[in-house]
Structure formats: structure tokens, C-alpha cells
Length: 190
Length: 165
Image (cartoon, rainbow over all chains, first blue to last red; front, side, top):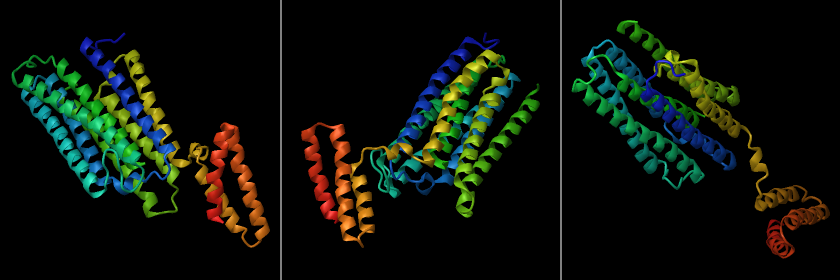
């Protein structure tokens, strides 16, 4: 039924399906909230598009370094795999730093707090923070996960070319990237 | 496939993802620069581009192309919910049919008072319109609630109309 996919991989896929449903619920809630709230502001007027576009670029780059790390691991080039895993974790860490700056800026310059918004309905601020915050928590978990895998790589656990654990970690990381692509579109662009 | 061949194919996907992101940003900026370009088709194109990106990531980076068709279908089942969100969110941006049916008496009074102001040239017709608004405002209240509550709801309606006149 699942071919050559290992039990761990299938387990991660099932987890990702449930996680995707959680995010879908949040996005659908956002859509309904937006429909029922009069005077919903245009997101581009208050949220920084250039900064969030750079965040998207960063996550896509870290996704690419992750697949390159997997390819290096399959070719038994462990040092290269470790290098690219650390690049991936660095990309995620920079993303978190930018997001922290973004929250600080929005709270101080735009009057956007968790429960209030100076220039429009408070639902705009709350839904923004809950969806990007939930995603940011995924990025944080992903960076922790990547660092654990990198430490195991450094200790020589994946020298034999069996990188099943790295692939499972990669699945989670790509999912974080996939969700950000959609969140970026729905919350920032349209 | 060797390591170099794999990296080459991944870089191809990377360029496609970056190109689609740039396309999205162009679709966002175009209606701002040229107001004659309609906004609605741009929203559809932006959503289509982002869903294409999501499918590219799932298919090539998460190696769905190497999985069995059964697992592939199972996962695209979850993506359907994202597709649904992608349909619902632009739909809410365009017209908001639900807002029209919100029970907001204040809104009803305001708009009808404006109609009264428009017809101010004929004083008699203005007072007639005011009487009609009273009747209109009272009927939904009485049908929706009990009689004593309706009597209470009518009182603030009268004062508001008096203010507008």
C-alpha cells in the first residue's frame, strides 16, 4: 500500500495530514471572519510585503538546502550533509528573528496587538497573530528538530547512507515551507 | 541518479518557485500602478500561483513523485482543504452577501433617514416616508421578538428618527 516508505515516514505523513487540517481550519476561520467583519483593511497597507517576500524567499532557500542535504546523505557524503543541514537550520533561525522583528514593528508602529488594532477591526490583528504565530511555532520546532538531526549526523549515525531519519525531518521542514507559501498569499498578498 | 543530477533537478524546481513568487508580487503591484487593471482576476491568479508552488514543494521536495499512488492520493485529500480555503478567501474579498443580512437596526435607520433627507423638498412626502420607515422598522421586530420587547425596541427607533429629522 505504501510501497518502500518506512513506518516512520508514513507516520510523519499522517501527522502532516492532521497538521494540514489544523491550518486549513485556521485559514477557513480567517476567511469567514473576513467576510463577516465590515471595513476589513487591505493587508498590503499595514503588513510589510517586501519583508514577508524576503521571508518566503528564505524558507524556499532553506527547503532547497534540505533536499540537497538529503541527496548528499544518500551519496554518503556526511560532511556535506551536515553543512547543508546547518544551513537549513540557520535559514529557519533567521526567519524566526525576522518574524520577531516584524511583530515588534507591527505592535509599535501599526498599533497591532493580539487583541486590538488601531486602524480597523481587532479581528484583523488577532487572526494575523494566531496564524503566523502558529506557523512560527512550527518553524521553531523545525529548527530544534534539524539541530538534533545535525548533532546525530555529526556523531556519525548516518555514515552508512541510511538517512531515513533525515528524510522524515525533511518532510516536516518542507511542510513548514509549504504552509508559509499559502499563509503568505492569503494573509499578506490578497 | 547521482548527487549532481539530483542537485540540478532541485535547482530547477527552486527557480520555478522563485519565478512564481515574483509573478505573485507582480500581480499584487500591477493593479496599484495601473488602476484600469481589474483587481479580481489578479486575486485568482495569485491564488493559482501559490497553490502551484505548494504542489511543486509537495511533489518534488517531499518526494511525493517517488511514493505509491495510494499515499499520493491520501495526501492530496488533505490539500483539498487548502484548496477550499483558497476558494473561500477570495470569495469573501469580493462581495459580502452575508453582511447584508446582518441584523443591524442602526444601519437600516441611517440609510432610510438619508432617503428622507433626499426628499426634503416635499415636506409632506418626507413625513410620509418617515411614517413608512417606522412601520418597516416595527414589523421585523414584532415578528422576531415578543410583544413587550418590540414595544421597547420601538422607542429608541422613534428617538433616532427624531434626531435625523
